[in-house]
Image 1 (cartoon, rainbow, N blue to C red):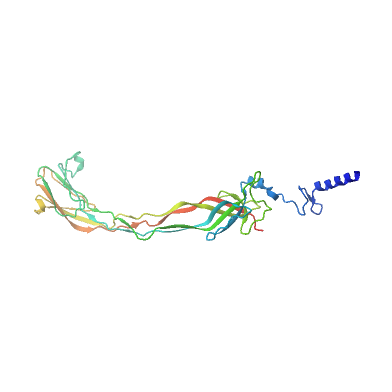
Image 2 (cartoon, helix red, strand yellow):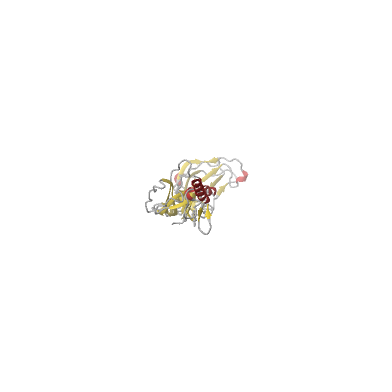
Length: 334
């Protein structure tokens, strides 16, 4: 009986002593002895070390051309953890821009009961209306006369070179984007008391890599066990567009008008002449009451050269960038 007890005690000492690895080296490990040094990360024993670095637990990552169909998650990790893209490119084109014509516009006339050729002398003059059509082309306009003795000055406004209307070309607006690569990461559902990630001993299916992840683009250096870095995005943010067409002021315009005002209806008399331009607005005044009725008005062009407008716009605008980045660090393929 004593001999059996001694043998059992000696066997227990051998088990608790560890696993000899040759040349006197012994690694302590739990369970049956192994032929090689015990893996300190076997069965997910390094989970806490990875998480301490801020990295999410390992997942199985597939990545490939966005033209391919992503494979289904493998049985080892059947749930989709992340889907994203990389290699963003954009394509833009915009309609051409042009400008419609400018036009020389006839001046307007204001009649005052005071001499307004020096406006600083009269604080609150009375204005007699002598309206002309909005798009007046100089055709004779007749109104009931502004009688002689009731007004003292006539002010002729400048001519105007009207703005050009922008014209967008027939080309279609193109604002497209494409991704070069796509990715799918898969993980296993977490069992109570476990990390829910593939352990080191779990085989990695063909086409997949074992990777840790962080939900950021500027993630720190990859852990030593997962040195291969990749980054993907769930989608885009920003917008692509086109600069609107616009037209500058008419250049080279020369709009000079001869304006005749008459005492007779329908411009029947010879009338009196004033000349206006883009930078000239004459004023006719009397030191006392006027001596002639103001009944009709006509105009002709001395120079009718409205100038040319320069078109702007039509350039692609905006930008797109990836949003919701995810950085993966992957273990070397075995």
